[in-house]
Length: 96
Image (tube, rainbow, N blue to C red; front, top):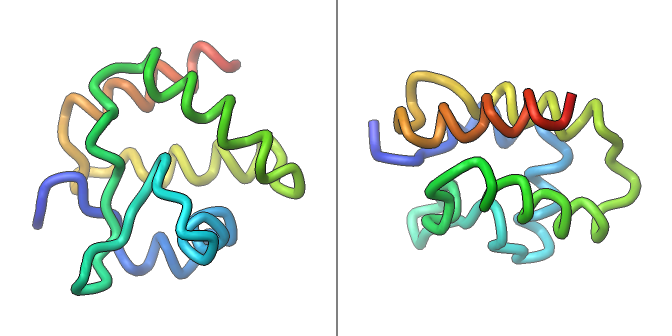
């Protein structure tokens, strides 16, 4: 599995991710020419991710905290890099 890859199943089951992709919003995820979805390469730590989520969430007001948490928890799978998994968990803990 490729680094920072988000599974098709996760994308198909997340209205939030689908909305970001439909808007060509690459601040959290992006889609390559083969239609694979990946995390934005800028995420090196929880602070960057937390700041980005705060900014992006303002542009998606129909999605509440529950959808963001569902999306983040789902993204924290073995397919993600260890560094990003740690950042996701820290972000969730800091938001709780």
